[in-house]
Length: 184
Image (cartoon, rainbow, N blue to C red):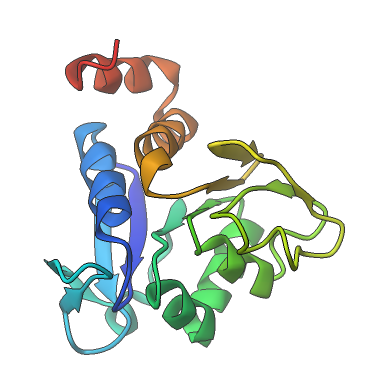
C-alpha cells in the first residue's frame, strides 16, 4: 500500500480533512492521520471533532510518499509554525515524494520554500498577496506542478483529492473512485 500522511492541526478545515482522507482510503491508500501534539482529538474550524490515529512525534522517523495539508484557520497557522512539518515537507520533496496543500495551507509550502518558481493556488488572499519567490499564482480549483499540488478551498476538496489519487495510483483508479461517488 501507498503510505500518505495527513497532519491534523487544531482548527483545520473539517470538510477538506475528511474529504482528503476518505477519498484516498477509497482508492486503497494507507492514510496516516497525526496530531501535532499529544492531544489526538482535533477540534476543527467549525467545531467538528476528529480523532487522529497517532501523533506527529511518533511517526517522524517514517517516510511517506505524500504529505497532504488540510487548510482552515487557525489550522494552517499551526502547521506553518511547526518546524517538524516544514522539515517533513522538504524531506518528502527531496526524496521524490509529493506534497499537497489546500485552502490556507499552501502558505505552509511558501514558508517551507517549496513554492519558489512554481505554479500554485490557494484560498484567495493567502498566497496571491505574498507569493513565493518566482511563483505564479493560478486562479484554478487545483494546480498540479509536478510533485507539488495545491487547491483553493472546501469547495474544491473533492477535485483536489481526486487529483492526489490520480498522481499516486493513476487515471484508472481515479475514474473508479469517481464512478463510485456518482460523479460520472
